Length: 218
Image (cartoon, one colour):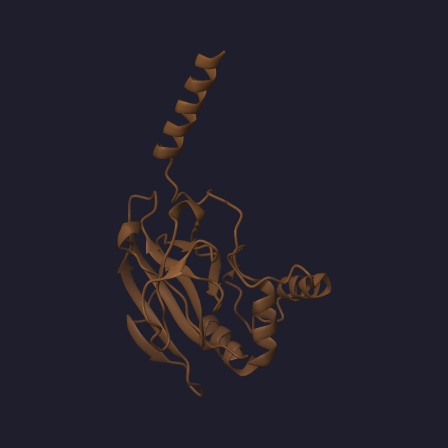
């Protein structure tokens, strides 16, 4: 019996060591986004609003990824409708595969669209980050990009804050990873400490991603 228990323990330990913790199916408990669990009515209202498509302003190509904090999305949209409406209207009227790479202003706003033709890299070389005053809207229109969201409890800043970014040391086994697809977009709010452009399981790591920084409203 003792041998069996020890052997089982050794096997489990070995399996833990060899497990690829950057796989998108890795889901662990922790603190990853702004908490609204004590406001069920607000959560329900935000979910209904998101499902209704009131935010779309003509943009029907994609929906929020399951990782998006819908309460934050709902609240920020209500506080800053002009920017969000302009963002989605721009996306709905623009050929995102044909537009030139680089930066493009959205007319009538301070918003800048960054069209990035880039390549995913090893997780160890990708930095985690968060922003205090801006929201990262990211829509991968070509290829597959792996995003990570890190746990607040086990992460620590490893740099000084400089407007508008700070970086973290984090435990990979506590991070959550998600792969993009062209039917969904990601939104990272200030409490969503995230990693972008992580290598995934596909053969082609080339991507085109649309990044728009929206003002965060307190």
